[in-house]
Amino acid sequence: MSSTPTPLGIDIGGSGIKGAPVDLDKGAFAADRVRIETPGSSTPKAVAKVVKEIFGEFEHMCGDAPVGVTVPAVVTHGIVRSAANIDKGWVGTDAAALLSDAIGREVVVLNDADAAGIGELRFGAAKDAEGTVIVATLGTGIGSAVIVNGILVPNTELGHLEIDGHDAEKRASSAAREAEDLSWEKWAKRLQRYFSHVEDLFWPDLFVVGGGVSKKADKYLPLLKLRTPIIPAKLRNDAGIIGAASQAWAVKQGKASR
Ligand code: BGC
Image (cartoon, rainbow, N blue to C red; front, side):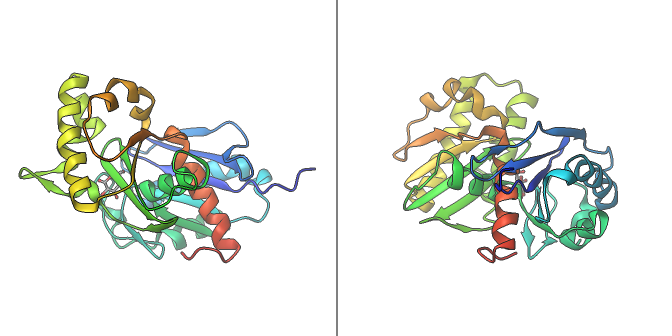
């Protein structure tokens, strides 16, 4: 029997809640992912029920490892602090305590983009990258993970920079492209505005673009003219689950704090 730990990662998103055990040697799912629709009213209580259901599917695989859970919000020490694209009832919720109570196991909760950043840093496009790396996830909103020499600066929320009088994610997220039926070229103009603003503020060494739309990166990344190299995420939309599971394991080992 292999001794590779396979902690469970769960990604709470606006449309789906997805989970899979993660092989931490490979940085890949150890079993097929389970996806359950996010409840129409995505309150903490309703979501906790779904998390419990997903945990039930994989409990036999994850030993005594804590479970890593991502939310699309600011999280400090297990407590959710914002709610741009989820039910406002999350603000102030001790999600780590709520979810641990629901499943009877320690839960480590982190911001979804931070989890994706950790996934890409440990196993993906930013592996061993030095200097400042910014992972930007383009989905319902824009999430950001800022990593400096391998250390994550959590909760950077760069999707909410105000650019030209707009909350940046309202113009440049993947959801904005779909809602306004923008061509790749038109959307790329908005991404150009966004990423050139971010590079002028942070002077990063590398941008990594994640989210589901990263699999179509060839349609828009070549249209961008930036001084910073910009590449698609390697783990695509799985980065959050992989990063969350990896972080939960690191917390158990005393190598990361909550
Ligand atoms: C939220 C972030 C989140 C991002 C991607 C933003 O609206 O404020 O916390 O990481 O969406 O889901």
